[in-house]
Length: 96
Image (tube, rainbow, N blue to C red; front, side, top):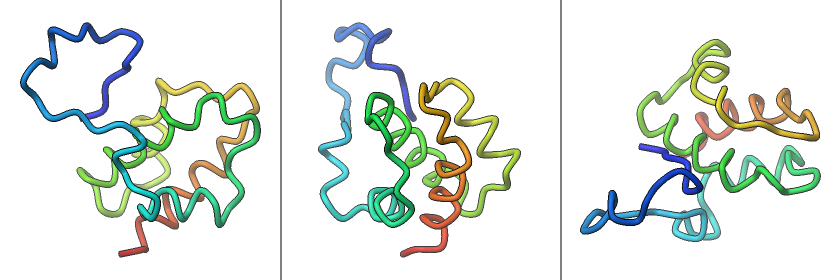
């Protein structure tokens, strides 16, 4: 489950497993898709976008555009790379 770290008090996750973007490793399918499609522009939103995309794909192996838009709606990209983000999520869904 993806949560916003800026709004999550540490006590609310005490004793639970927490995965950050570093915890995805360097070869996660979302990261590979992001790089292949040149998604990042400024990088400001990338940790949140990638963690949300990873959470979405963990719950929905083949999300539609509507699924992606609804799930990712809380993540704001100041550079407006939403079409590339959606494309990368679809590409990552096809990877193993």
